[in-house]
Image 1 (cartoon, rainbow, N blue to C red):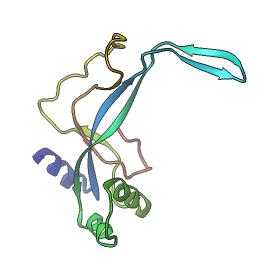
Image 2: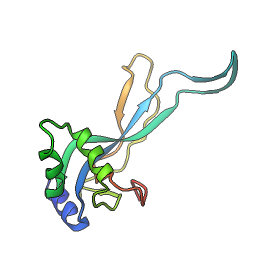
Image 3: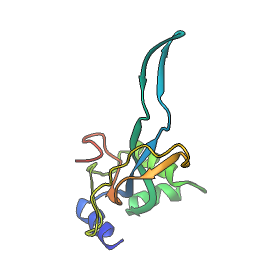
Image 4: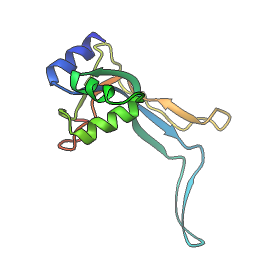
Length: 136
């Protein structure tokens, strides 16, 4: 949390959102259809996404958005901040000096539960900018 607060202050963000990179492993081939014809297949694809891990640093201007509503979930707060075009740089960086390298993940054996697999260590970042991509 100390590193996240430091990152939030140095970057001058309106909101900083902790992210983790997750992989969704599909246990079967995905078939692409056009009409009733198979036009392609991808065997056991792995999709990688950044997900919100539920840790935030907020500036006073974000708190003002909350005060204007009686109840506001954080997804709604993030979207409201995006609509208000609050300050942000739009990057992610490591939040932990003890980060390990991403693990290689192959498709699990079919007997394993399908679902989301942790892929990389926690990152700090924010998603309030259209000027630059979410990560460097």
